Length: 193
Image (cartoon, rainbow, N blue to C red; front, side, top):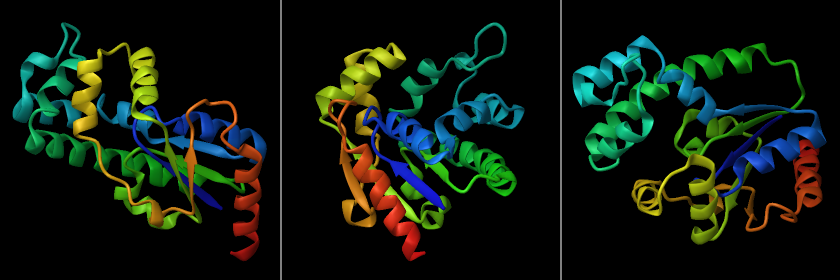
């Protein structure tokens, strides 16, 4: 069974995914981690050098993500360009992980999951939400960014249609968002499949 978790940055997707993985004995495929891997490939770096800027590389040839973000979050065309390149590389990695998986449950976690082919593969879909102020605080603490940079990211984040998901989890505290109920809903959906 494939469980998909999507939602804006700082909504608590990783917390929900990790908790569910423990309860269900599932593997979590965190697309953000895979996205980071994709940006380290020569294909991605060449695209950035030729189409975005050579100034986003440090002296060791690594991409400075914040500097790249400052450029692409202000230019939708450049953002779409790097997203398309990253997505292609990510899909190759994810497809292989899904093919090799032996666990009964797989959790796919990604803010843009609902925009990818994997969304339709999910048997159970969760939309994680939280108040913007809480998400901002979480992201600032996690990523070491400013409130202004969060606002820039937020401006470029997608919209979600709640009716496309099996459930919406309001995760403002990280403590009691209803894990037991969520597990019960997943098991019920599994019985129907």
